[in-house]
Image (cartoon, rainbow, N blue to C red; front, side):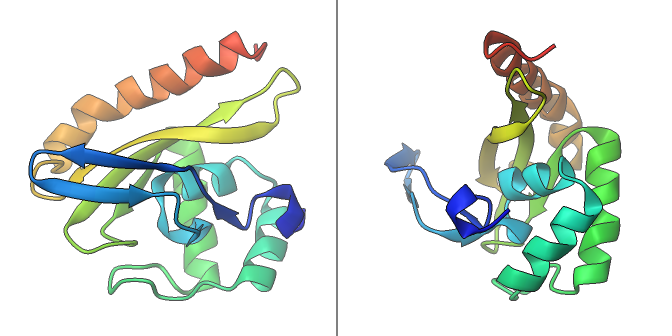
Length: 148
């Protein structure tokens, strides 16, 4: 895949406001440091992932970003095994995200769904509660798109 396929960066245009915090959605952010991005990468064949990482690189966006390609590939295997990804302050400090892949009728990963919150609000216990809901929502969307 190349950048034209849309898998190098992700973007959605919107602004989300919650409590006293405003988040700009729609910025181009590298896949390797976001919940949806890592979920999408984990859904791809490993050789394809390695090609994407070679082209796009793995820059450290925040101090927690996994910027070593081999470590990231190992991490993505775990993401694939459990069915969801966690952005653990890898894109923005103090922010955590849970992401899951959405598939189309051809079993191709075409997008994702995620929830984000302040890291202290989305602690390990809350992740265990919410991750199955995110995975379930991604599954429902995928099924609506013809995925079986």
